[in-house]
Amino acid sequence: MLTSVVSRLATTLTYPLRPSDFLAVVDPRHSSRQVRGVVTGVHRLADDVATVRFRPGRGWRTPRAGQWVRVGVEIDGVRRWRPFSLSSGEGEEPAVTVGAVGLVSGALVRDTRPGDLLFLDQPQGDFLLPPTPGPVLLIGAGTGLTPLRSMLRTLLARDPAADVTLLQLARSRADALFADELDALAARHPGLRLVRHLSGAAGRLDLATPGVLAALVPDWRARASYVCGPEGLVADAERLWAGA
Ligand SMILES: Cc1cc2nc3c(=O)[nH]c(=O)nc-3n(C[C@H](O)[C@H](O)[C@H](O)COP(=O)(O)OP(=O)(O)OC[C@H]3O[C@@H](n4cnc5c(N)ncnc54)[C@H](O)[C@@H]3O)c2cc1C
Image (tube, rainbow, N blue to C red; front, side, top):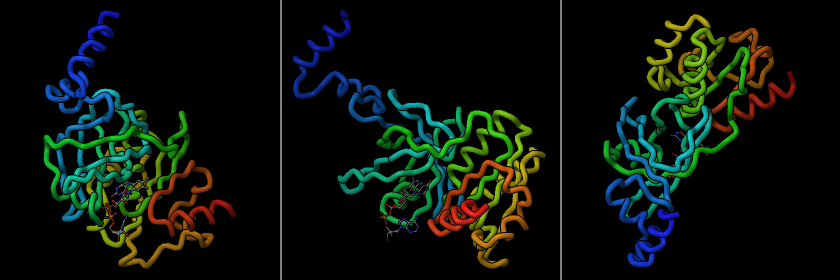
């Protein structure tokens, strides 16, 4: 009660600024109107791909594996928003992994430094793991690997023996996002089977054609499956599962 009286009073006395604006001076992540995060690290995975870790301010809801967040970046005085999947596992410091393809992604990959502020919306999306998943199949290409990495790290943290097959599609090993990390995880976790299809050498994988996925993942029908990547890949997968 006392708090709310003081707060109302302060609001009157400091108009047009609100108490939250003064708190923002002390802690730049604090704002009652806009959640922000402070960048804590930028890890370059390739020339044009980086993972940006951040510490969100108060009011940000804990994300679940597979969710995405709209990130706002100020470029030439204009705040521009784009959605990015969280690549961090549940319970880890939040992170997005971004491929530089345009304005906002380019700014995040090339110009972001520890200590910078990001504007954030709440994590959202229903691309989520079931509460008690059985065998899981994750299929991803390009930056589509980001929510799958989040799911994989979450599953293995919950159960180091989790039964997971990850099918990664990439042009080459150099293009395969998180390749070293995924190899290391597969070496440590016998329940994780990593299948990598490199289209530069092996040609495009036509998921929609019956038998193609079965050749790589014979038990695919018995697995809860998650696919993320370019539209064509997702459409092919939908066709395959519709006919399964
Ligand atoms: C739910 C969701 C989750 C996403 N998660 C991620 C993620 O984890 N990591 C990530 O890097 N991106 C992710 N994206 C894409 C991201 O939101 C942006 O669309 C992307 O970064 C391009 O924004 P930009 O401002 O850099 O490019 P813009 O300046 O808006 O576009 C510049 C040019 O790039 C082209 N372009 C846009 N997107 C792509 C693309 N993906 N590949 C090639 N060319 C493109 C446009 O056609 C345009 O010509 C996600 C998108 C959605 C909808």
